[in-house]
Image 1 (tube, rainbow, N blue to C red):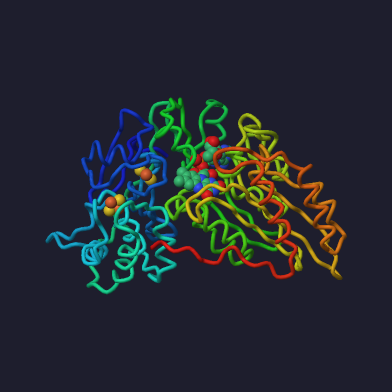
Image 2 (tube, rainbow, N blue to C red):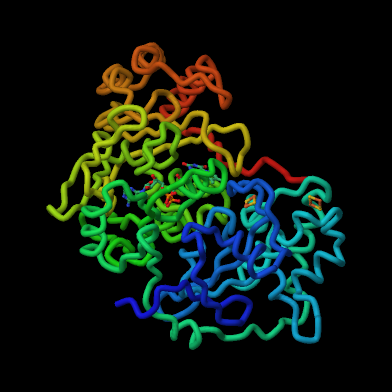
Length: 474
Ligand SMILES: Cc1cc2nc3c(=O)[nH]c(=O)nc-3n(C[C@H](O)[C@H](O)[C@H](O)COP(=O)(O)OP(=O)(O)OC[C@H]3O[C@@H](n4cnc5c(N)ncnc54)[C@H](O)[C@@H]3O)c2cc1C
Ligand code: FES
Ligand code: FES
């Protein structure tokens, strides 16, 4: 299986082969400190500012898919077998600027320039994938890039103009990438299993090893908290965890499926869920972060859990003993404690096909529209038959130490016509259901008020969408 223990990838057209002293080195550390490609910047070191954005190409279904990623929270080992393009790799041999660079110059999209390589690379990913360059699409592409001095108007104008320049010939790297085989193994500190059986054996041998899916949570333990992690097991090379199956029974999502892989499908089925997913982190975060990781971290403010709980989702937990299926709502035991036994990992998430008439709403409330963690997330699913509410499920994030259902509020509304009196009673019940968090994101009082407001909104006949794009960058 393993032909060579090194990390091998294509960097701006050249094959690179590295065996780093520190197997937990980030891609950004390698790019800046060893490859001396200092165009890629380090700002926040936590996936927030986009200064470290570069583009990574990976073979998927026989072709290379290019995505913008944050190098600061990406392990070097995660890009084994991939193509990495940094801002230095964009200029043609004759020194000609790439259209996205040329457009940024001509539209005055840079002042101090610190953020500019990140913007270039986010726009380049957009360009490379030939995605629409209307304002809204560009805003979504650039929401993970912060600029303090230029202002977004000229940057968006550059994005709108970028397809108007002569198209450069992009090198075809597929054949070269196909020659990179095996996966890196670095002492006992980093493992990259390629089958579930290997993963299960590793978990038995190294029970304290950290499982690493996208690394958008775990990456910060290294980049910000400077933790000394003994062993890391990468999950990204295991095909059995990398699947989406949409069948008669429902939607099955493998643990390493990233938001970007499934967002369109979810948005098609459940627009409210699609809209919340679109606001998880940024394009870079959604290109890396997984739904499995979002659930596994057990955060009380993770966005997926409340929505999936109202959809009656199940978790398949796997180990050498086999698969154990549990209701997602039973996975979260208390703050920082989940129902995950030694040797187990999340294999997949199953969302049963909802009844035909089910109504589903979810709203994320945060201080910023994009790239922000929820203060409160409310999710609601119910049927309305002959005016009465049935099969009601309500779940919130940010209202307790774990994401969980509002059982008393559900009881207050189930079977009623959701008239003003019943809704008022349900709002009263919400106070007994939860003791909201009180922290820098929001006060307990605010959270309580928002939770009640969302509950009201969920039972209006035609709830007004919070998803409308009212915000402007300029
Ligand atoms: C800038 C930024 C913005 C963010 N915005 C949001 C947001 O808006 N909403 C939100 O909910 N989250 C947000 N996050 C958090 C994070 O992106 C998500 O929680 C993401 O889904 C984590 O997935 P991952 O694959 O990156 O997990 P990882 O970082 O790889 O892992 C997270 C945890 O889960 C464990 N784990 C991963 N996979 C498995 C598995 N299969 N079985 C068992 N354990 C596993 C890991 O050991 C680790 O403890 C943000 C993070 C950043 C850095
Ligand atoms: S340095 Fe800010 S996102 Fe990486
Ligand atoms: S140009 Fe200065 S931060 Fe963007």
